[in-house]
Amino acid sequence: MNANAAPSDDAVAQALARVRIALAELSPTVLELEDESHRHEGHGGHRAGQLTHLRVRIVSEAFRGQGRLARHRAVNGLLADEIARGLHALAIEAKAPGE
Image (cartoon, rainbow, N blue to C red; front, side, top):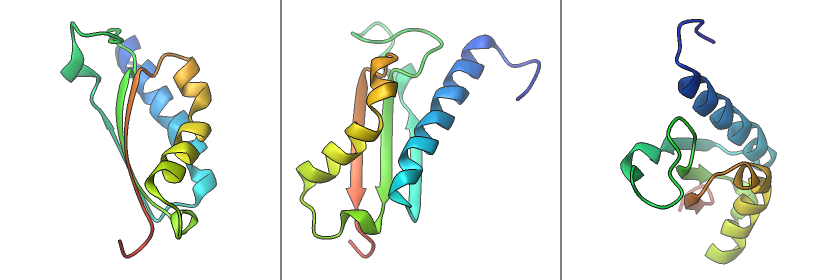
């Protein structure tokens, strides 16, 4: 952690780290997290310096044979604590390997 980083940078970095830890339960082969919070300034749910809007791209064998709804429910369930902390919007692209 950079001692010169702004508090908001620390808050977002910590939130992204918690998301990575939570989603590690799915043993993803690909995990991309994109903080889109800055794109929603002035809109509902945005709070400056916080992770409020997140795009998740995840590939995991755990999704094999599951439909889109089941995959989204799995990701949402693992991120329930983060949602309770103020994650307002979550865009999910969840695939099994080879899809």
